[in-house]
Image 1: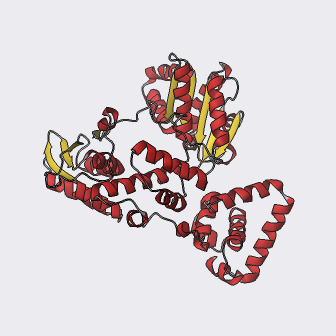
Image 2 (image 1 turned 30 degrees about the vertical axis):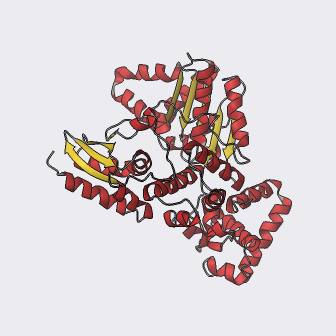
Image 3 (image 1 turned 180 degrees about the vertical axis):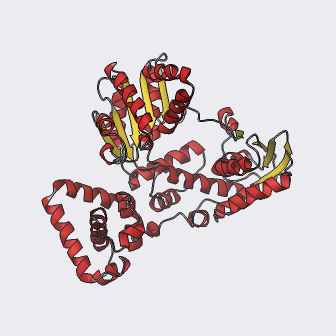
Length: 455
């Protein structure tokens, strides 16, 4: 390896700084390079919490930089306390357990790990209005796998707990039957294994036996089967074989079965043949409970008003919420600062939404309704009038009327300079649909909850 430690480290710093986040400065202040020997970059952290929180946040960035130099290059992080700072860091931070410490060393060439994550259990899942039905269904599966609900199809946006739930099923079934044969993997892993088995003809039979002789099949993100015709064919036969044997199948996706594009109809019909359940973004009450649970596990005392402030400010998904919480704790611990609202603003200034103070803006409504309908904000306010854009636009206009004090002219201006009559027509149409179509009325209420986290 010809690269110097200074060259590699400078590239890492450039990538971290490219995020333009206040948290990147914490990384630079708390992690330093020590040596580059035998294809191992050794980094030094000032304490365990910095190693666990900061490095984990940037591990993908570090990996990408190291790959540029050599596919064999790995890194590890060791802890060396700052001798100049003998004063204990406040708040008191938890001691890492042995499994946590192992996370700090990561190989660039590390392959996908199909083992269940020990943290994803039913006990650690926070139940709220947005996920209680999915939670109940998944618990029901463990009581009578292969019979009561089969298959189970869970869909919802990124970071809402789909992976947590299906892995919890795996843990519970293993607890009930330690000999149960369980496979948990992503659709991408299934596809890659299938392709490798085709390339190595003698392995094709081994691949089929591997997935057709199991008791529980858990597959994440089946939407990525789209356009992979051969993989879809193989999965169709695997699905049928397991179903006929009354083996349990649980799938997740970011869309409902009928809305996944470029997947064979006979396969989507299999997806929808059992129980289909969605998970919505967590409401304020659930987000608060999640943060309280995070605080309890971290053994750090977090003021109640800070928890509420975070719960009101970070609304997109559970993953973002937990990430925000960890960022605040890491910053407070490393910089030796008290945890308060000012600190939250400092660390999360680019993440906190406009509605953190309780006021919902037109821009926020446009953003959230666009996310709900899976269109871009540019399409939302643009001139195109295709069917998949008109309804979301009209719904967003009506919600602007509901949640803001803006005039019809002000609303129209935000939607690409439309006049007040267009906004009035949109609001009237949505009101009539709410009155005459019960399904749309339910959908509108879901969108309202999605827009207003305090609901």
